Length: 415
Ligand SMILES: Cc1ncc(COP(=O)(O)O)c(C=O)c1O
Picture 1 (cartoon, rainbow, N blue to C red):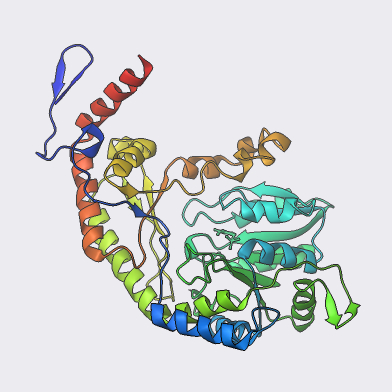
Picture 2 (spheres, helix red, strand yellow):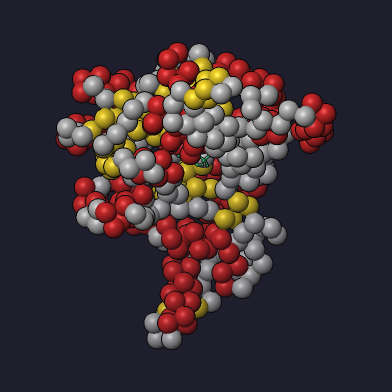
């Protein structure tokens, strides 16, 4: 029980003490967002042993080639060029496409999307997002086009695809390149067609936190033969022969151990997706009854990877702010994340370059204050999800009590 102000007593409606007030956490160990999915250990180790026996560790070994072939097959695209990570894949795709000057992109993304441009002295121009999908708002893009604009870098955030046709139409009308950051969207379809074949090219990430991982890793995929050939050279210092270099290049190569991990990951892809889907449905069922919490839904008729569980918190209905809820959950060992707070435009160097950018991004700003990512993946079971959603219900019921607990904590810290 806590006192609020001088006299009012507020009691919790449930009997269990919350961890934030000294009770035992709901989970004995932290559940994280993005705990890696690991395929069969024996398979990974067997493939690594083969690599060591072969003494072919990198530079286009057989496992990287097999990984590229299988990724291209799944994404239903002609070319896949595997890379050391998704960020270098973005950088190389941007350069190979000839993007310069300004490129229009959303601020609501992992900062690597913006850095991949700025690293090459290209100005990211932040466009506001659409309220429902959290994607770049295509109706606002044309107003941002200047003579220096060379492209659009759209993000298939949370593994949900953008409205591709609208973006393609704008790009075509203005002669712009269109690149998709599909770091979240491997194994996903849009209107029945697999993500990977849209725009001039798309980029996947296979970072450890993604549902298919190569420890670190990424890939550019495209149907453009000429672009693919250029990217293939660029990611290997520009070498087009033993002693001949055709382009400015860099080392973006994926190595064989990464590919080994990726291949075992792909062997287990169906199981990973099925598990994520079960967790997603359990979240959906639990969340639907809680006022003020909105789960971002996947279209069940499409192919999804279900790797992000994104919940929007409406403070005025739920009773606690997003950040207050995050504090209560963290204490219970549910390590929810405020992705991608505070937005690229509020991170350096963009914050210093464009201090007023937020004025142009009202929806981005609003959504960034409401979103929480919840744990899923192989390390989280549907039973865990049921415990998490029960906890969320309990928190909502006890919202007035918890508000008072949090207020007294703040007072204690301040005073
Ligand atoms: C939207 C987005 N773009 C790009 C990246 C960068 O990928 P990587 O970590 O493989 O470099 C990530 C994160 O992992 C991401 O979430």
